[in-house]
Each structure stands twice: as structure tokens, then as C-alpha cells.
Image (cartoon, rainbow, N blue to C red; front, side, top):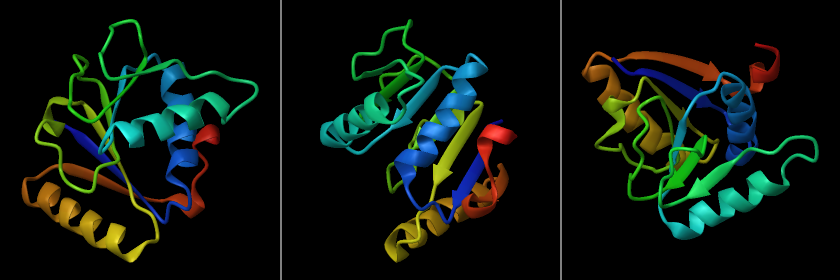
Length: 142
């Protein structure tokens, strides 16, 4: 069954993703990041290239290749079933194939509303959900 982590009060989703990715890459995870479109994928990719001077997070957009640890896509072409980060406002129809799903929720009211709908959907289907206040957690020290 998929384990779901909801990070709420996320001030900057890209910063939180970077924090999560650094931890999970160290654990040798294969990570799929679901975005809305090519533009969103390129924005995230650009951020990952420039976010840290001391570390590089190897990733690819589209055309999944097994050797990439991080795959960013909007059409679900991933062959991995390890770890998924959902940046779309809706529920991915394939989320249940992953061992772990991360949902990030900002302080924007529309984002919160859509996240509550996703949370209700997952709860109604019996998924184990962990709610994490992003203002009170530092993933690097976990």
C-alpha cells in the first residue's frame, strides 16, 4: 500500500522538494515528480540546477531513462514505482503504484482547498497518511 506524506504550510514548494530530494537520493530512491506541463517541468529543472552550489541532483525531464534518479514529467512515463512527488492540483490516477507519495501544500487558499479534497480522497480509501507541518520540520536532520 502507498504511504502518503502531506507537508502543509510549505512556504516554497521548490525549496521543500530540494530538501526532500537530497535526503531520498542519499537513500538511493528512484523519484518521479508529477508536474502539470512542460513549462512547470522546466522551471523545476532550472531550480534544481541552481539550488545548491555543493550538490547536484541528477534529473531528467520527459523521456524516462533508468539511469536518472529523478524523473520530472507531466504525462507519467516513469517505470519506477518507488517514490512520487505530486505537484499537480489533482490526484494522479497512478499514485497507488508507488510505495510512497509526497503531497506539498502551500499557504495559498486555493492550494489548501484542493489539497483537502485530495486528502479526503486518500483517507476515504484507507491510505495511511502522515500530516507534517513544514514550518516545524527539518528533513536534513531527520
